[in-house]
Length: 192
Length: 192
Image 1 (tube, rainbow over the protein chains, first blue to last red):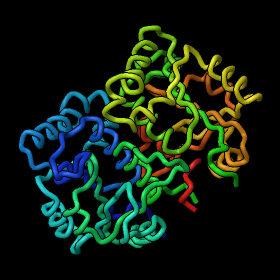
Image 2 (cartoon, each protein chain N blue to C red; image 1 turned 60 degrees about the horizontal axis):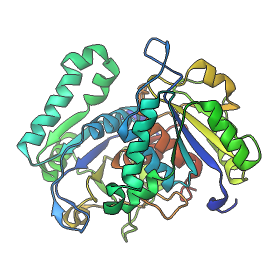
Image 3 (cartoon, helix red, strand yellow; image 1 turned 45 degrees about the horizontal axis):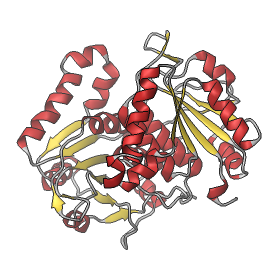
């Protein structure tokens, strides 16, 4: 297993296209605490970039305002750890641009993984993904807001992570919880 | 390993006594999203009760208003999964009452675990705690808001969980992320 500074993992939080409660494809609004919680978890687990995907210019501006407050503005002066965490955030209008940017940076297309609360046929288990990551393969993890990623996003994935199972029939984690748990499963260095 | 419906795990989110940035003992304010995220994670992983500890009557009322909106009120009618999650929340003015209530219910004192971002001397590893839980021992997990649990709380614990390690020197997870990851490590049924 290589040292963790050599891992190349990117997290993508998708606000469009996602689905609503009845399965229609929609765009969702950015949640302030998603940015903070996922940036903090990302920074803890060595994630290179936390991409926030939204096609809406006003929402892109909102994300940039929040992150610059905590990195370049007053927030960063009083809470340097928050500055460090939020510095990994980048905004993009669509997933295609994110994949293109990652491919250019790493010199190869990342292995794209989606996440889903339901079991799908193209599952790849956590251990297998850990191996890829610690072998130095670029891995991109896609998470959906609202009721999850749209079918068009699921289709471009190389594989899907199995749903998290907690021993109950209830399966409604927040995206903040799901990202945190999945990063721990894939990237923690103290578990085994 | 017993079936997960036999586990007896309680989560306690402490708002007082906790410490602030410079180590002074304080009381913190309740955060709405802590209630939702931790209740949803708790319900997913089979936690019996999610205790919210605050000595302030106005804050206790706030928690009760939020939970009743989602369980008995309009919120529960439009989102039954949220009703199910938030129904595990109970409010208490202090930790002593929580421990007394648990002891009375289970007929024995729970094994009390604290969590800390720093390494302490009374550590018990995740695997050992999992074993206790699936052997049917009542376990109570204490989490601090603000900058963490006050020393007086750490002193009453039977043991402390080791800090989560993500392969970076950065260690500033939100309490929502920390609870989610720890519940997954202790209670998930699909990991091994």
